[in-house]
Image 1: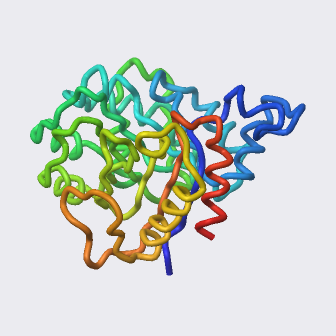
Image 2: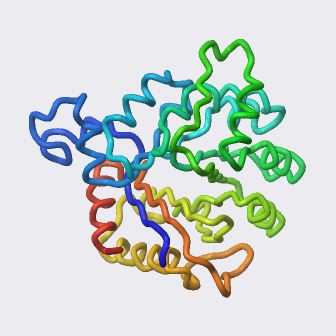
Image 3: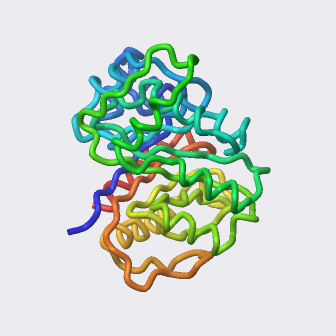
Length: 284
């Protein structure tokens, strides 16, 4: 049995998707998430990077989407960009207590995007990975350490049976086998970002997470390039060796089937929904 493949986008409020480009002409903005979630299978929530969102917002988003839909959640910038992973136990507690658990069974992986000028510090990275909760119970235990900045903590894990994390790095110093070994020991996914700055494909967790930003050196994906991604994703999901691309620690000889999240983001954003739906058809 293969892994589950999800294709989608980052965010769902985008002016250029309106008027028939993706959203039908006349569709109300309050109905856009419901529409998007019935044509895609995952949407990355980016607003959580900038500020903690209300529990009621997470509950509303969950109610508007199908039961098997997934919302990966981007980690707060205070953790990744301001404190730069150092002394972040309480900021992590505040983030996990802020209301994200209200997504329930629709909660996807937590996404930790590191700043481009953050270099690989083995001690700091290992300390951060050890803090990340791997089960709902571990998450609640950490979330209970929140401080007064979290006025109304939400700690109900109903419907949540697993906690996953993915890390996106953007500095070449992370191209180190020691970093890959750390991620594998912690079962944390190294995000495949598909950029000229970070064109590596090492699998480090029991799932794959990609953020597709436009083919390296280009601002969009051709049909042939989407075919290439469909082939890679098919291999990951089936548990077959995926040897196409650059690797830090080498190609896995005997991989297991993995769930795959593929989000079209950033550069080719106008075509992101179309790319996600096309990729889903190609993967089959």
